Length: 338
Image (spheres, one colour):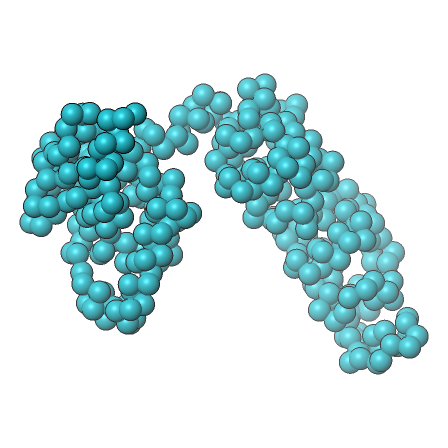
C-alpha cells in the first residue's frame, strides 16, 4: 500500500505546505536484519544526497536506522522528497538481497595488521596519487606515512564529505598495489625515469579526453597516423580551425606548465641528456638509435613522431629542421654553465 505523506505540515509548524511525498509504508518503521547492523553506511552504493544526510547526523552503521519512521527523517533539515525516495530504494534493495557496496569496500580488509612493515612505513608522498591530494592530506590530517592514512580512515577522519568516494578508492588501490608488490618494486614500477618515449606517450594519451587524443595523435605525435592540417582535422571532428587551435594551445600549456608538465618535461630532460656537453646538434638517426626513442618509426617521409612533439611543445629548447635536432643557443649556454 502506498500512502501520501504530508511533508513538513505535520512535523514543523509555520512551514509552507509542500507537495506531499509518496512512500511504501510497508518499509517503516525500519527493520534491519541483525546480521547487517554492523555494516558501514559509507561502504554502500547509495546516492550522495542521502549519504550526506547520514553523515551530517552521524549515522555510520545500518543498525542506527532500526525503528525509524519517515517523520523522524523529515525532521532533518533539507531532507525532502528526493532523500525519502532514495531511502525507500535503499530499504527495498536491503529486503531483496542487499545493497551493493562501493568498490572501495574491498580495500577495507587491508588493516594495519595485514600489511607488511615496509608498506606501513612507506612515505605517503611517494604514492602514485595526485600531488594536490597528498598535500591536502598532509596539511589537514597530518598524513605522512601509509599507516597514518589507515589510522585516519579507520577513525572516520576521512569519511565523506571530507573526501569523495573516487578519491578514497584511488588511494586504497595504490595501497593495495604497494602491499602486493613491496615498496622496492612499487617505486620502480611507478617511476617515469625508466620509461621510454613511447611509454610516456601512452601515459599522456590516458590523461586526455577522446577528442584531445585525436588532436594529439594527428598534430603532436603522429605515430602510424598522418599529420593533418587544422582545417582537415576540424572537418573530421566537426570543429572550426580556431577551436582546434585553441585545444592545441591548451595542450601545449599543459605540457609546459600545467597538468601534463611531468610528462612533457621528462621528455625534454631525457632528450637533452642524449646530447654530450660539447654537442649542440644531432641527426634523427643518432637519436632514434638511443634506448629512450626505441620503437619510434624512423621511416616517416617528413619527420619522426618524437621530433614532431619536440618541435610543437619545446620549440624554445630545440630547433627541428630537415633531419637534425639542434639545442637552442641559450639553453646550450645554461647546460655548459651548470
